[in-house]
Length: 251
Image (cartoon, rainbow, N blue to C red; front, side, top):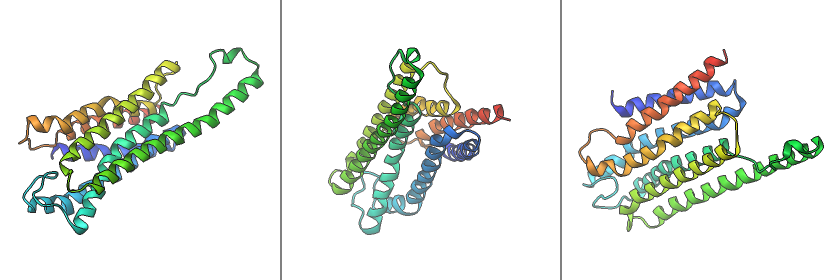
């Protein structure tokens, strides 16, 4: 069994545990949606690479991004769908972090105010939370759409820049995730919930995955294993442990 196989098994196990834990913890829905969606996208990516995109590119005599001849017809459509699936991972990381680490803007002396005033402020903060989260998700979706459309419109002239596009999306998702996490730490005194621990694991290891995807291949071009696979084994394995612990505590 390769590292990639181990990563896939760990991802499926983490997804199954997330679905089960969602029945016991209502606030776990963001992680459940994140894992279900990214697992489906990973399956789509593997399918396209194995059956459509990768065999066609190899037949043209080049690598995935620098083939000698451009893809045409349905092969090109499949390649752009694959690009969208890969870039969606970064968008999903940013969105789930924004969701679980959101901190409402409340006055520091809220506890000293009249209970009716407190209720009104908290109600307004709840409405603002929905608006802010929708705006943030919309911004991430627009950036993802723009990047996918850019690669599709400029293919094949700048296909050699595809790795840089993946790197940019990865760095932006890491920055956005850590930005909201730091804000949460500054504005909250509560401990991390099981849901937040899962997302923190992703934020902790995602920079390593970005580095592994874009720097390691240059140093080890003949490596038999995808360097990202090792990071994903750690990521999804840790999520299995965290969610398993959450289920155990609720027995």
